[in-house]
Image (tube, rainbow, N blue to C red; front, side, top):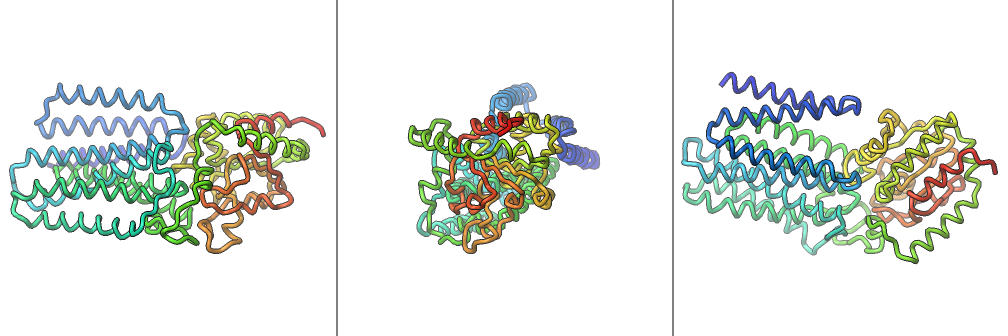
Length: 480
């Protein structure tokens, strides 16, 4: 037993060290490798410890899963990374549910019967919730279904009642005679699936980063409870590590949005009634990922770009020495990160100081902008978070906004009773000049008009960022 605990501690330390290394892009690769090695050791130890699995069969399944993961990792585009992360969260929950289901089938009532059935029921319920919630998140992010935040009459009461009923069934499950245990577990799984479905169904696009991190936490919690059920200390420990890390990240994301987790899950936003839905035209504008535009939209964008081009943008860009670039989800939709990198090179080639301002919820998952910019080869050290970059806007000659709206909207501080009231924003308005490269002047996810566009020192350059950013790059060195 002492050897088992020691090995478990070493594996968990390996995971912790891997997470620590992944905090820096310079050591992230080694952190990922260390985490993968720790997982391999954990799997090998499980086979040795249990002695029940047929090794050859298990190795075949591991090889198949590894091949699928390799293909998925190599083929997924960065813009689809949020969907991929959500899918992996769901598969993690499903794996925990399958583990306890296999344990239930082979259980023969050896000691601690109430503890086994209670933890099995909890793991199955949380795993099912994670699976269904993640599937809905993938459908939302991919734009396949439930693209709008769906608010049903009495929805909140139904959700709370379903979760409460699931908990009560688990408690009853621990006290009824043994022959009823197995029959109640499918009911718990069904309620978990329904709870995950209803929970994610009512989440709007702006809150998806919070939901993804929360589902990541749930996948770890399900694994930890499953570890208790099957008496695997490594599974319980590593699952708890993932659960706690995901919950901390969820808390950080909620604070960045100035929301409570309860309000997010309840589908409530400040200034809106709970039963109110986002107007279709606003939601469609916010989450449309299709590169194809209607003819009317293209004509409007071309007209807007032409209007912006008449401004003295070349003089503004060439005279600026301290520049801050603010990326947002619109950059991801336009897949303009490489164009932004070329703009960065051109600006630095003229001796200008360029930094990037990253808002915690600028995207569809935590760190979305960091991942996209890293893909384009932009040095991670140039990326600064909200607290570090905000004091520097006072001294910036130019702020360039690429596909960001709500995270730079002064209405968050100036207006009350809106979905973004009180939300910390990037203080782009304090820069000497601001160039906005957004698709149009429509509001972002929040539906709140951006007061930044009305200010005199702000120059709007409407259109697809993949087209407008190269035009800005071409202005460098021009003399008006």
